[in-house]
Image 1 (cartoon, helix red, strand yellow):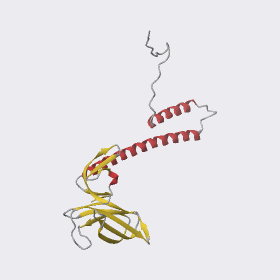
Image 2 (cartoon, helix red, strand yellow):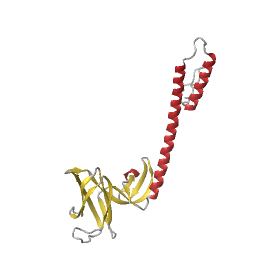
Image 3 (tube, one colour):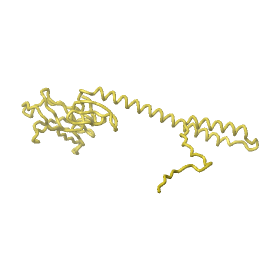
Length: 220
């Protein structure tokens, strides 16, 4: 013989109260002022309220309210920044941008690429390699400042002969006072689409895939 057993509140027992939402700064301030007025009206003339304590409590309420308003303002600014970033990402569709990578796509009109220096350099040398890893073109750019730089290659090798269209690689070397400077190659890719995912605004890059908007080093 089986029976179903269910928990039921005991007779006369009060039902559990639903959790109350936390009070906001306005509610805290209103409650404090009501209590303060009541205390002032009913205070003992021979033992009045401590002015320093009242002032400290009022300052605390003002601080809580100020923090809440600051958080609201920061939230609105962040939301606006996200919307602006989404709009800018949509405007990039069809354009080329520089992102981390060493591929150079040589076409009839030449190729674009770039590099990034972590610090100022006395000398920067860029080398273009073919599919077999052979250096086909090398350029000494001399001293260059830190930051992102764009490059344009007409497709000619060191002898001035136009090379076949295709994919090449870019290598970057930099130095300052005889010591190596961190340098990284950047690839020029076309933005095929834009959207949002769990991480935020993202771009669909042709031949590369989806990358976060923050991956863009320079808009060409």
